[in-house]
Image 1 (tube, one colour):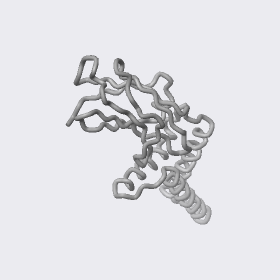
Image 2: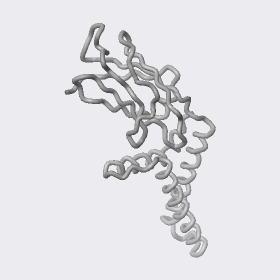
Image 3: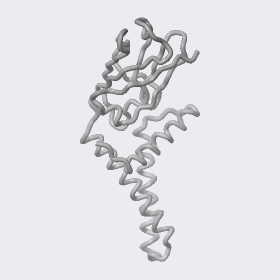
Amino acid sequence: MELEGLNLPLEVAQRIADGLAAVGLRLPLFATQLFLLLLALAAAGYGLLRLRREGVKDLPGLLLTVAFGLFALGVLIGWGNELLHPLPGRFNGRIDRIDRQGPDRFQGMRVELRNSRGEKVSHEAGILDSRTGFFALSYRPRFADPPRTLHVTAPGCGDLDHTLQRPDLEQAGGVTIGFRCRP
């Protein structure tokens, strides 16, 4: 089940975790989400105390308090969604090799799932079917840190990191990803 508007807090946490990782600080996504939840709850609590003391005269303060409260609620609902609807632990799909044709076009290609810290989380070697480009991977679902990218490698080509969203991981039919060799 996809909760479109309520995914914003979890997406914000992911972007912050990605930004921190870019400067060398790799935190588990759950830690970033927990920090943002505590920050939002503290801000909403402070706003409520201030509004209670001064009354509802301050409209921007009221709106900001409501926004922080909704942000915290979004994190909690996102966690609840993960607990009630866990990921299947399997991911399959197909690579569509755009730049090559013929029976050997998938030779040497590999795929793997990576988490928000860029660590491999899929269990298999990630070898593609030599005729169709189909792959099937399994992983251990981790709370608040699903696989974030499908990492594709091919001999003589630059790697491709395809960003995955939760609906991609929930699809039973898998995803199709186009691949073009870029040295």
